[in-house]
Each structure stands twice: as structure tokens, then as C-alpha cells.
Length: 252
Ligand SMILES: Nc1ncnc2c1ncn2[C@@H]1O[C@H](COP(=O)(O)OP(=O)(O)OP(=O)(O)O)[C@@H](O)[C@H]1O
Ligand SMILES: [Mg+2]
Image (tube, rainbow, N blue to C red; front, side, top):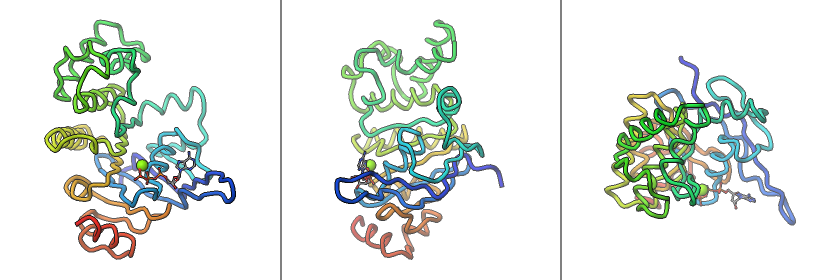
């Protein structure tokens, strides 16, 4: 078997509380192969975003390991962290979060190219090509995040993530704020990235129908623990755990 793009081992996160500490994530392990999409589902507060934020190193795990393409990135800091950082990109629910409100979308999309020393002309050409790939008119690159629609901004956020040439894309409710048509378009784009570019995706989503149609495997998180994980069909159509059954009963 090929090396997983992402492997998470015994990940835990405890937040200090006023009276008792809260274990938001407890002993979570999973892996994602190249070109594979893992759906992460679970009731609100079950720990999905906390897992995502730890994988992105936006949040320090209390314990456990995160391996990116076999490399343990858990303890990395400074320059070493920045070097791997580019390889994992996150797309959030509110796309404007990915951009500096004072700068143009084009600047935001081209930022990782600039950091890597790509000259301005080439950067502009590649930014325009990425925007087109994401179904955006490159002319929108001159606008600021608040001057485009939510759907356009989300596509720009995907283009921004792609500019970094990631091996892993983490989508935390990335399509939840979009209407059905735009949602479909973003999902088609993600499917293409997965199939053509072999990008692995961690897909966090409340919409189980969407997870069913898109994710190869699905993990159900319940109170910070994985209640069940397996091929999506099996988990969503023939769940074994109480937590997965309850979630599915509530959804369908
Ligand atoms: N920075 C923080 N400090 C303290 N507690 C936190 C912090 N971030 C998250 N939590 C708590 O950790 C638990 C898991 O939160 P998390 O955001 O991971 O849930 P989620 O599954 O993403 O929920 P949702 O579906 O509502 O987005 C919750 O009880 C939450 O209140
Ligand atoms: Mg969340």
C-alpha cells in the first residue's frame, strides 16, 4: 500500500476549563490515502473542527502524532513547519476568512507563489489560470473579498489553496454557506482535484447526503472519539455504532 498522505495517531486535545478540563478530542486515529476523501461527521461540538485545526497546526495537540506523507509534523516549528505547511491547505466555511479584507483576491491567490519567488508576470499568469480552473473570471482578481459573492469568494479560496500545490486539502464546512448550484460546482471541482491531481481531502460536513455522494470513507466522531470509521456506504447505510445510527436517523 502507498504511504498515506495524512496519518493521525492517538490525537488528543484538552482545553483548560474553569472547573474541569474539557477533552474535546480523545484518542483519534485515521489515515487518508492519495486521491482519497475522508468524510468527518458528527454532532455539533463532537470535535471535528478541533481535529482539523490540529492537523493544520493552527492548534497544538495535547498528545498524539500527525504524519504528513510519512513525516511526523507534530513537533515542527519555524522554518521546518513553514516548509510542510504549504502542502496542507484549509478551506473554511466563510471564505472571506482566507483573505485579507484590504487586499485583492488576485493578491491573495498569488501570495504563496510570491513567497516561493515566482516573478510577477508568471504569478499573474498562473493566478489567472487557477481562477479559470475554479470557474472564476480572472477579472475578479482585481476585487476585494467583500466585492464578490460568497460563492465567488469560496471559489477564490479554493484557487488560493491550489496555488500552494497541496497534497492535502482540509474542507471544514466549506460548502455549507453556499446555495445548491454553487455547492455542486465546488464539489465537482473538488472531485476533479481528487481524481486528476491525486489530492487527498479531509471533508468535514453536516450534510450526510453530500458526504455519501462524495467521500470514499467516513468517520463518525462522537464526544471527541471515533465511534465508527469505514467505507462511506457501509458507515452511512449500515452503521454499527449507536452514535452513527443516531446521527443518520436525525439526518434522513
Ligand atoms: N479554543 C477553545 N477553547 C475551549 N473549548 C473549545 C475551543 N475550541 C473548541 N472548544 C470546545 O471543544 C469541543 C469541540 O468543538 P469543535 O469546534 O471541534 O466541534 P465541531 O464538531 O467542529 O462542532 P460544529 O459542528 O458545531 O462545528 C466543543 O465542546 C467546543 O466548545
Ligand atoms: Mg466545527
